[in-house]
Amino acid sequence: MELIPHSQDLLTDLESLILQSKRQLATAANATLTYLYWHIGQRINQDVLANERAQYGKQVVRSVAQNLTAKYGRSFDEKSLRRMMQFAQAFPDEQIVATLWRQLSWSHFKVLIPLKDELQREFYVQMCRHEGWPVKTLQSKIDGMLFERTAISKKPDMLIKKELQALQETNAISPDLVFKSPYFLDFTGLKDTYSEKSLEDAILRELESFILELGVGFTFVERQKRMIIDGEDFHLDLLFYHRKLKRLIAIDLKLGKFKAAYKGQMELYLRWLEKYDRQEGEETPLGLILCAEGNHEQIELLQLEQSGIKVAEYLTELPDKQLLKQKLHSTIEISKQRIYEQTEMDADHAKE
Image 1 (cartoon, rainbow, N blue to C red):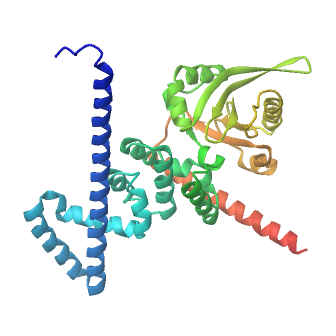
Image 2 (spheres, rainbow, N blue to C red):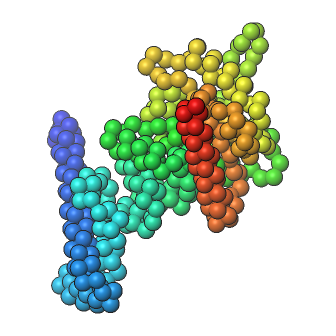
Image 3 (cartoon, rainbow, N blue to C red):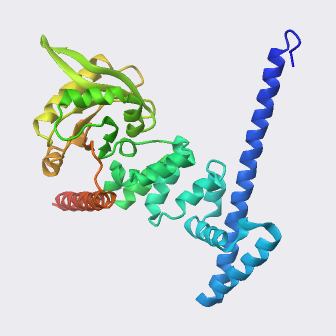
């Protein structure tokens, strides 16, 4: 139907109100359902635990499911009830759940419930909440082992809890929640032999994919950033800005293994950026050296963290998922052991 003249603004406002109301109704309905499912799971768990007989638990869940399904439909079948029980077990604190169901849907929780490791689950909860991931993105992050690849997973459990708590309470995100290793660069299509320039060109061709792999908050600034130092030209491969960290992020691409000489080169870039490019209100720039392979002992001895430098591996071809999982878990255990040993040494020196 043709609009009466000058009524377009009115129509636009009314449509906006209707859509906003529908979104609010959907959010309220999701919160109500999630609240219901948590209480159902908790109530069944209380009954089963009070009886202390496994056989009773199986029988009561089956019996209750049959009755509820007959009255209220398949949403309350035995499989669904067991998921609700797992939900209440995985998230036992009602106050935390009451906060989360305003931000995460029941579909989010269904993806999170199967995660057995408490810290891993809390990482995905907080990152999903903080970055507003849809369910599909959350599942993709879990399948891509984001937690195992993120720098924070290499820290002792107490430090992981502390950083996740800070993210929960103040939305303060740390570099260790941003950077990871390895980065999956399979979107470049590069295989076997290639040059650093080929890698850089491939990344820029697929810049959107690269930024998605880097994570939320990264904005591309410049390629081959030119720096004139003592009359000599230097060029940084890629320069990004991270909005949440409020820092410039210098990225240098390297073929092969990490070499100690890369540290001095990156330090030069970072100090130049701090002197000439850093804006008022920004934090000190950080550097990311992307290598095909890390030399872990060299990286540890160079104490790169003190210089604001991260070293990460990249993969242009993804290996078997199980092999990658084993490698990541091994790396996490080795890193945690090194941190523990360093902490013990520091404590011994403090006593002397």
